[in-house]
Each structure stands twice: as C-alpha cells, then as structure tokens.
Length: 112
Length: 112
Image 1 (cartoon, chains in turn purple, blue):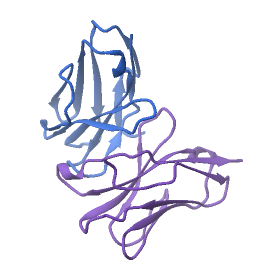
Image 2 (tube, rainbow over the protein chains, first blue to last red):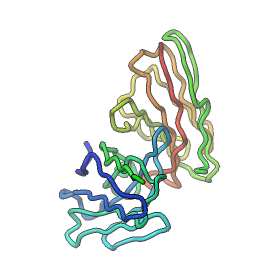
Image 3 (tube, one colour):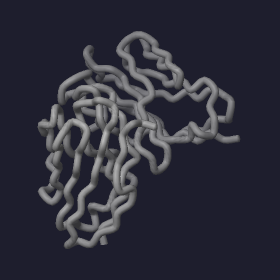
Image 4 (cartoon, rainbow over the protein chains, first blue to last red):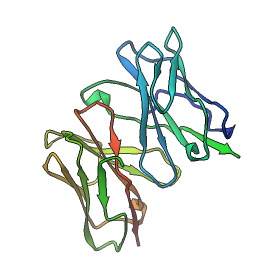
C-alpha cells in the first residue's frame, strides 16, 4: 500500500503557482520523498526527490516540513502542459525496498 | 525523450495468442522494471531486473514471462492471456535498483 495521502484532484490557473500537498506521517528516517507525474496515456515522468532539505530543479521545487511528515510540490508557473496526475512516493534509496509503490495521486488540471 | 522505448505501442491479441512486448533503454542503466496499469487503478510493479538477474516477481501469473537478455533490453512474453489482462504495460529503467526510474511510453494491450 502507498504510504502517502494526496488530494484526488486540484485546479490551477495557467501562469499561477501550483502547490500540491502530500502527507506521509509514517515516513522513516531513511526514506526519501519522490514526485512523479503522468500525463494522459504516457509513462510516468520523474520530477524531483528529497530527504530533509528543500530541493529545486528546472521543473519544480520540493518543500519538506521539518518533521518530514508532509511535503509540497510547487510548479512555479503552471502551463496547460502540466495537466497530469502527480504522484508522491516515499521510499528508501537503493535495493528492493526502494521500489516505487504508486498510489492514486492528485489529478492537476491547469485551466486557461 | 526519456531514452526508454517500447514496442509495439498498441497490441490487440486473442486469448490463445502468444506475443511479446519489447523494451529498450539507451541510458546506460542496469536495472529494468515492468509495471501494469489497469484502468482506474494505480500502477502495479510486476518484475524487477538488476544486472540482468530477476530480483523481484510480485506474484505475477505465469502467463506473463519476463526476459532480460542484457542490460539494455527487456521483454515480456505473453501467453494465454485473459481479458482482464488488458492494460497499459510500462517499462522503466534506473541506474541501479532503487534509484529514480525513467519510464517508457507504454504498450496499450487489449485482450479479446
């Protein structure tokens, strides 16, 4: 079973920031928070991951609370092409325990 | 361009047919994965190969038979499938088992 809780859907206006929350209250000390997204009828795409510190790359920013029980994925300027299902996954890095277990994710709809 | 390709992209087969799905990765990774995504269900991990050795088989029926002849290629041989096996089959690869995975576009399989 997925160890994360995400809202089933969210809307965001084009050009605005999209903030996608994720709860992972049972996360272990050696587990990372990973985000993937899946655009309709395509394979999932890796976005970002982090352990404790906030992370930023060319796609998004990841904000992890100090107690690590929740995180937020931020798309700073959402476009229509960001419409997708976003998956928050916690996992260890390495070995079979690090396999991805997908939940239902959040369906983000970016509207003009 | 993810560097992971899958063929065919679409496949329709009868229950008595034998077919194979192919996955190829051009990323220099040494771990490869098969996932199944049924309608309105989360992605399910089927098989994991690390260094061409199968390291995980998530209770998948024997009518699905994986093969990994080298680190760049992964096959899923299909035999005597059922209509409920109709799904999107996704291949992924990672630098090592447990690291971030890169997905192919998937094969949409329909079993009649």
